[in-house]
Length: 70
Image (cartoon, rainbow, N blue to C red):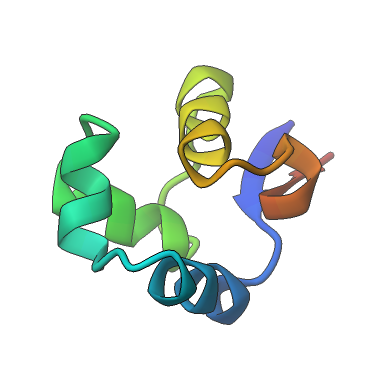
């Protein structure tokens, strides 16, 4: 199973609404900017721990940001 971002554009909009650039947000979560960008663009799949960290930093539930593909 893979974890993927539900909607990349929506996640980008949430980041902007919360006042984060992708660079700043990746630093806050301890991820490289490149890795975070690859997650958003469906080029890499985050581990459950990374997906949880991203969701929590945004104050959202896992299922608000990510989905699990079989």
